[in-house]
Image (cartoon, rainbow, N blue to C red):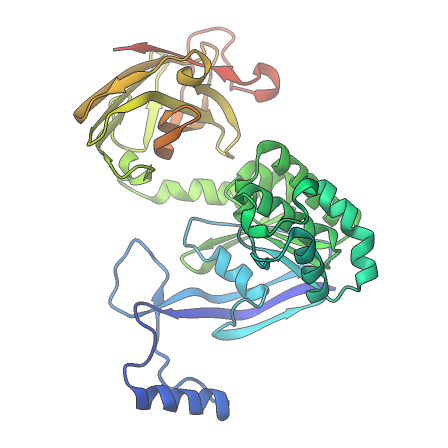
Amino acid sequence: MNAIEFDRVGKLYRLGQVGTGTLSHDLNRWWQTRILGREDPYLRVGETNDRARKGGSDFVWALKDISFNVAEGEVVGIIGKNGAGKSTLLKLLSCVTAPTTGEIRTRGRIASLLEVGTGFHQEMTGRENIYMNGTIMGMTRREIDAKLDAIVDFAGVERYLDTPVKRYSSGMTVRLGFAVAAFLEPEILVVDEVLAVGDAEFQKKAIGKMQDVSRGEGRTVLFVSHNMAAVRSLCQRGIVLENGGMAFDGEVNEAVDFYINGAETEEDRQILDHIIYKKDFLRIDRILLNGTTADRTTMTPKQDHLQIVIRGNTSEEMTGNVRLIIKKLDGTPLAALNEALYSGRTITIAKGPFEIHKQIRLPKYMADGEYLVDLLLYRPSVMDYLKVRNALRMRIEGFYDPYARPLDLKVDGFIGLESEEL
């Protein structure tokens, strides 16, 4: 039996100002849609949800023609790039907004955690919010009483239970929100990328709880995440969204591989295309990794170092260092350069133009395989200046060392890298 059914569902948004442009048209729209129950007479054909392309229409399909079923007890991962339509799909399922076209059918109570503080009243205490959410889900006070201690213990907010939620940190809010959603026994649990707010310990607990909910209690889970390792470990099936449409629906490992390898079709992508600035006073003109500005490179056996050049301009003095993380294609971190944190080695960058040069020794037994590289410029325990997620997709053709093999977290442990100033 299906717990969730999406039947040709679409969601159309108008860009810019809301309204038809005139009061008479607004009144006519209200009369036709609200009173007579007819289709919106001012609804126009929208364009594909491609945030990289300007387009000429004022209307965009955040989702279009989405059809799939989810069986009771199934755990499905919804993956895709930012802006692909993942959160819109979950909001439609949670009745936060209504679909423009199509129909959604569900069986059972739905508990949603779509963003930090979803469903919480900021002026009410944590305890009051737990009871309010449980009541909204159709539970009696006695049922909520029986779950209260487990919710508070899991969230770790016992000391702040009778404090208004507006005084909670974002981490505390998401812990309590997840605990409420998971412990009040919904038939369907909907979880967006909010778990990224929590610390590593809480993320591990949350994933474990979702596994218990799905496998032990036979409940349905829809899970959105950019953490491919978590998607692989938790989900049985994956749905890949792209520009508002379904690009893939199938076994989770195949879905993750489709999502990761799908980027290979993109041409002329540059490292700077992935940059995320954390401070407005900083601008980067050029990033070179092993002599290339492209986000893909192949390293031959003679290349046992990764060279980094960062050139930019800052209007404020900065103190920090470069941080580099080498990951598997599913996002599992394997090795990192983190000298500013581990050994206190920092560099001072004066106002104006600057250039940073570093050379990083790769593990000598690193063999054939493909890896992703994250790059950060940061001041440890204080701030990030910039982050370049998946800056480089690095193919290693293998080193001469006779013991060369792919990096394995279980065998090698997490590796600390060292750098040389150039």
